[in-house]
Image 1 (spheres, rainbow, N blue to C red):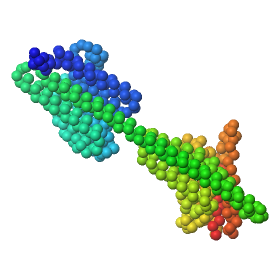
Image 2 (cartoon, rainbow, N blue to C red):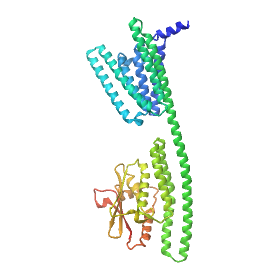
Image 3 (cartoon, rainbow, N blue to C red):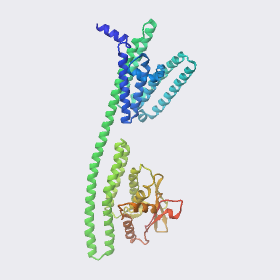
Image 4 (cartoon, rainbow, N blue to C red):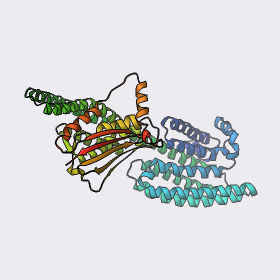
Length: 499
């Protein structure tokens, strides 16, 4: 009895329901992964649903009724060309396997050549199909299919080279699943030829083929689930690293604020002692530095919060390289700001490097749209020139937020260093933003108007700094629109004494 049932199952797949079961299973996979494509926005699900859909089309000619048959009747003309459907699902299979194992990232050259080869094969199939439409020779399309089979077999063998090289457990789903389909397809072909030779029905060969389809697609579905699990695990690890880093940065922020408070208290005591001694000049200088510390105390938490949010965006987008790259820049900038709180002066080279770090991090929120450049005259040695710490920062910040931020495109900013006279280094901070006039108009329309003291403090600090030199420092702010109607933006000219 059991032997009779197995014989019936093997010899009559079109009558015993095995064909309907196979097409039904493939149809469910098609619909499920098509829905996943819209949910996950990942093309790999679209490729897989397309693959299973054209497998269904290649076999639908053996089905004469049922829900799926009636559903696809409007495109029944395609079903009349099962060879075309077979060629299409083979092509989609190659694209699916390449994307599933991320061959484009791991082996870009292999991916490039295999895509070119697949395009040539598909063009060949299209030409054969068009010629067949004109002459109606069915033998032509069958001969073309055999040539296609040879070409796809060669391409499949080549594809397995990078598949085996990929260091990922996902490769075994593709390799084993493809092996099952290949094995059962060859076995099905042999049985098909044997049945034809003996004049027997060819249905047993399809039973073998359907077993191959089911085994292969079971493994592919499991592989897609495994791939999604790996992505989620990696995303969870990245988020945990971000949380740990945020906690570390919060502790760093607290330490920075505590240090600033201690420095402010020390400066207040020292300023009071100097006032009691009647050293008014020294008092003014220390008070200016104290104001700078207060300004940093206000700026740093806000800047740290915004910078971490920008870096967080890269981590959420799974762009770990950029996240680590900008996190390193951020940590370096924080160290420099901490060091500057202990030093009233720094070298011009260090100031420029700190400024460049600041611009790079701020540029995160503008999707790196700001083009920034620093040019230095050949007769200037920035490492040997002193400058008040963070003197340039308020002007750079104003250029970004009040000049370039309102612009939609073509955002440029530059710093130019050149000698002016025998004892002055002229520093030009230029941007092509909206300019001072429009910036003031926007500010006047705001309900809450924040008056920045950064530029005023920078002017005072430069005046105190200049007292130890023969030349006098100066800061001039120019609206470029007033110099030429063809220009826009702001230019800050800082004369820095160095001899």
